Structures are given as structure tokens and as C-alpha cells.
Image 1: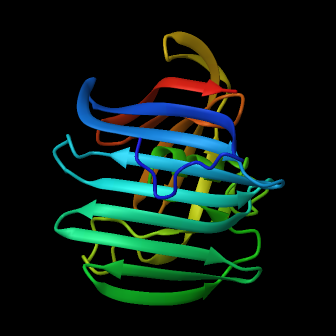
Image 2: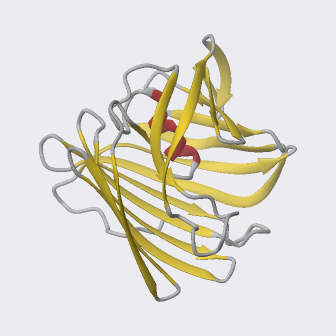
Image 3: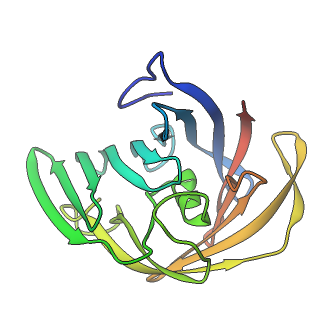
Length: 229
């Protein structure tokens, strides 16, 4: 697993895992490593390595999220490589606004926007989507409709990729069921996430953590290894 900032000695592991991406039952070559740790008292760090270098897209992303114990984000650092782009950026969350700085192929952009009341937050990965589940990511307290802060799609204009966005998100919960995850049966519930013209279905375990993601075009991500310490 690659890191933007490596784990420090004072950090205590909370959980870790690996999702494998498949399309119509066949591996795509993309994987998503993640680690969640407790940092100084009252803070957690989530590291994600979304590595599709061996997949058709060849894209690659790293995320480093510092958040309060209640899930409220404080800082997100990220890196992206692919489609002829190299991007590095930071989101800094204050009480009433978020400031975004990113450098795209050597050109730097800075933007700031007000944070909506009760905002949600996610970043573009399967684990990142799980931040909308209510266990963390912003201050959303209900799963109905929420305004959420996120990063722009890689399918947009090349210089708006990973730009700051605030979008309306509709969240729909389903009933608990059992899924076979990492060679064992796991209780999980579905959460459907819709924004703009996009939709994702994620399955959350007892820790409110995503163990599976499904996209309408046949792409899925499934936890193959994960542990809670």
C-alpha cells in the first residue's frame, strides 16, 4: 500500500482492508487498500490507495483524510495520476467554509466555498463513498437528502478534474441481509447513493463500513481482506 504520509509510531490501528474491483465477475486489475488509525486523542486518519495501474484506465489515486472522532473532516490530501494528468491537492475544512488547493500538471488553482448546514462529505473511491453512511464524513445526521462536499469527476474537463463541488445527494437505506465477504458470512445493509446523473450502491457492515460497491455498468468492488483490531 502506498501512502501520502506514512503511519507514525503514535498511531493505533483501528481497521484495514483491501477491495478488489471486478466487472461482470472478472477482475479488472484495480484494487483499493485502506487503513484507519487513531492519531492523537480525538482524531482519526483514513488512508486509501486506489490503484488501477494494472487496469484498463491506468489511473491511480491516494487519499489521506484527517477527521475528528465524530467523523467531521478537518483535512484531505490527495494525489491523482492518469489521463495525462498529475494532480496533487488539499481540502481544508473550517467551521463555515472549505478551502481547496490543487496543482494540475504544474498549474495551481485555489477555491473556497461555504459549507452548507449539516453537510456530508465523500471522496471518489468505494471507501470514500462510505463516508456518507452517517458514521463519519461531514455532519449529516439523517439518510434522506443532504448537500455534500466532494471532488469533481475524472470524466470532466481536464482542468476541472478533482475540483471542489457541493452537490445534492439522495440516500436510501435498505434492509439488513447476509453477504459472503472475505470468505465469511457478514451482516450488511445496502445504501443507495444518487447525485447529479450518478448512482452507486454500497453495502455496509456492522461498523457502518463499506464491504461492497456496485455501479450500474457492471463494475463492483468487494472486500477480499479486512480486519477490525
